[in-house]
Length: 230
Ligand code: XBP
Ligand code: MG
Image (cartoon, rainbow, N blue to C red):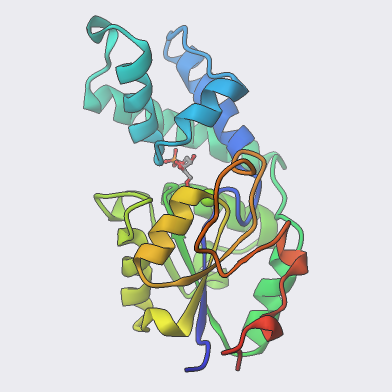
């Protein structure tokens, strides 16, 4: 069966976003009068929980006495502030695409492949990155975007990839996923997708068993390397 679409994760795959996320979380905590500060080592552990609101809730459960826990509506407000602070950092030039990403997306377009996003990150973060990297709205770069709270169960659950496939109207066998993390690989594989992994700074230590290929970055990826390429 011939390849019809590429489906991309965002955080860690299109760009090394996580240090910008971490800075935005810490800035939001300060702005809300919270004395929380996530170090790189803290964040590496916290990234096991995908999704910013879910990550804050996991942090509370593991690091704070119950009396100091924020209720879900406060977490949502805090996270909305974090999303605005993340956008400000990206707008100010805080991010670039990883090597090979722009060229692969252009090459896929030239071949008539469709392009999709399947991400845990909130939709506004996809827009910020698309504006910074391509100077265009995300839906001018990608045909389908499945993001954030559009599914109840975030990665490693396969739901966000199933949603992207559903919107593409394609079987998993005709698509290829691109991921940087074990949680993302599990999600893509759970939806039946062959997956190329380019580990990122925060995921380099993880196991990528089950990946089709593991590459340092996408400049090393060739669409022709796939048996099923068009
Ligand atoms: C990325 C994430 C996201 C970002 C923050 O996982 O877990 O939560 O860290 O985004 P993946 P939000 O790359 O596997 O999709 O704060 O908008 O949730
Ligand atoms: Mg990722």
